[in-house]
Image: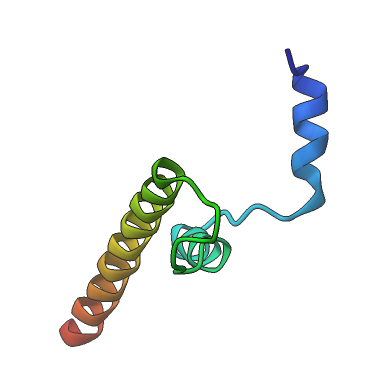
Length: 73
């Protein structure tokens, strides 16, 4: 079992983005699009693809929100 203090110190090595837009960008950069890797099992490849698809939808929703916001000005 991981102690709470140990978990907290592990996350102090990077600055966690507070804004939603920054967090979406962080996810987009952390989980780049990629093909299945040699030796990677199908289940983990599908899980990664699902994560990436979710991030793509977040990026798209963010872009749509910005485009709609600018259109109103």
